[in-house]
Amino acid sequence: DAKTTQPTSMDCAEGRAANLPCNHSTISGNEYVYWYRQIHSQGPQYIIHGLKNNETNEMASLIITEDRKSSTLILPHATLRDTAVYYCIVRAPNRDDKIIFGKGTRLHILP
Amino acid sequence: DAGVIQSPRHEVTEMGQEVTLRCKPISGHDYLFWYRQTMMRGLELLIYFNNNVPIDDSGMPEDRFSAKMPNASFSTLKIQPSEPRDSAVYFCASSLLRGEKLFFGSGTQLSVL
Image (cartoon, rainbow over all chains, first blue to last red; front, side, top):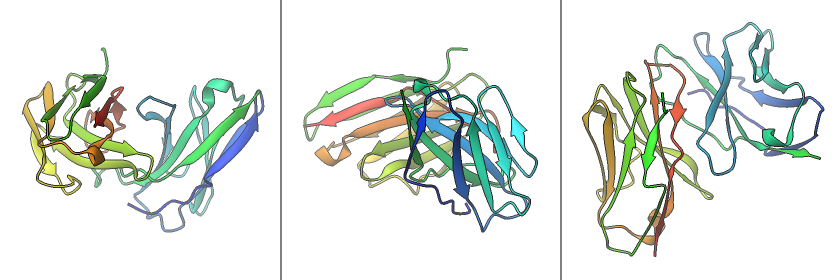
C-alpha cells in the first residue's frame, strides 16, 4: 500500500466544518483513497472513498487534489459524536485484499 | 443483517490459559479479517481468509496464535498459551468481495493476567 501521512491530532469546534488532510504523494494510478474512522471502544467504520473525483455521501465529503497527491475529508457540521480517530488509506481494490491501517488523526470536537 | 458478531465481548484469563475468540461474519461476505489493536502498535492485521481459506497469516505474532474458518459463517482465533503481552482488543471484519469496504465487529477486549 502507498504510504499516507496524517496529522496526529486536530481540534474542531462543534458545528463547524472539520477538514482532515492526508498526504499520499506516492499514490499510483489504480489506487483509491479510503477513509475510515474509529470511535472509542468501537471497531473502525467505513466513511467514504474516491479515485480522482470529489465524492460526497451522508457522512462526509472527500476532496482529492488534481495531482492526487493529497486529499481532505470534510465533516460539514461536526458534532461531539464525530470525536474519533480518522484513518486515510490508499488501496487498489482490484489488487489489494487487505487494509493496513496507519496511526490516523485523532479528531477532538470541542463543545 | 446484524453485522459482524464477535464473542466474547470481554475476556479475562490467566497467563498460560487457552483463549478462543469467535467471529461470525456478515452473511455472503467472502473475506474475513482478524486485527489486533494496542496503544503501542495500533491496529495490526493478523490474518485474513478468502472463501474460508487462509490467504495471508504473516501478521500472526508467533506459533501460539492460530486461526481457523471451518465454514463461511464462523471463524476462531486461538491463543495457546496466552501471555500478558497478548492483552489487546481483537477485531474481526468481513468484506463482500476483494477490495470492498470492511465491516468490523465490536471487538473482544482480552486481558491476560
